[in-house]
Image 1: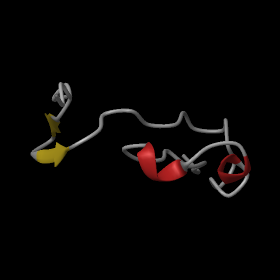
Image 2: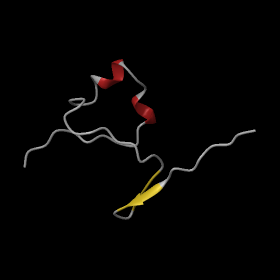
Image 3: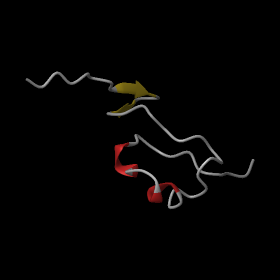
Image 4: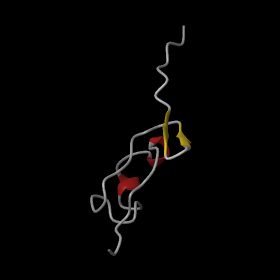
Length: 51
């Protein structure tokens, strides 16, 4: 029996199947994180930016 939990959310009109994101600055440009986990399970990445 498959008892999966629906964690989909809508943010700013965009539907996300997975609301789990990385935090800016914690994984550089994501390739460093790929050595430690399957990055395909994350909903998105918040990269470094200039403000």
